[in-house]
Amino acid sequence: MKQVYIPVLTVLGTVAVIGIAWMNLDLPDQSRVHACIGECYEQYVADNGNILDQQRAAAEAAASASPAELGAATYASCAACHGANGGGGIGPALAGRSPDFIVEALTAYKNREERGPQSAMMYATAAALTDDEMQNLAAYIETL
Image (cartoon, rainbow, N blue to C red; front, side, top):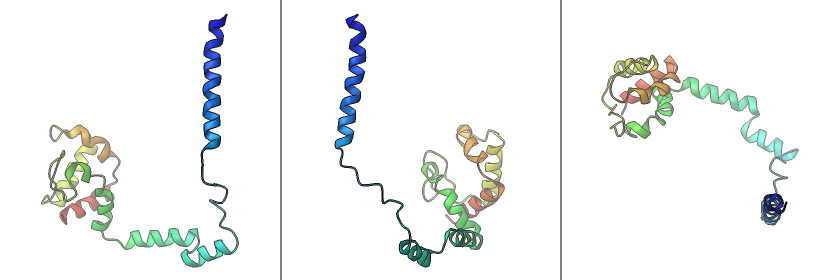
């Protein structure tokens, strides 16, 4: 019968120790994190616009960006394998490749076609790209 109590007491003791430690942590007061109301909120809106203004500004900025600028944001996840300057690394070099080559390769990967020994690494990445994102990415890579 004593063997049944040992695991139960161990669990209860562990919970008690964690609870006491948690209560004694010096955590910042979270009650005021979202307390920007009244004048604080009015000042924020005056400085930044309301949420609709902010979303409209972001959409206008994206609409006025060039394909290469839009592609630069997408390329950030490519840089881990292809290098920040497109010079290659784990993946092949992309700098100097034509936009048509890039779009053709991404389309092939999206269709799960094999283009080399590391093709499988690109399948999921390419599948997540829209046709416009592929074009933008190709435009950015052309600038490298």
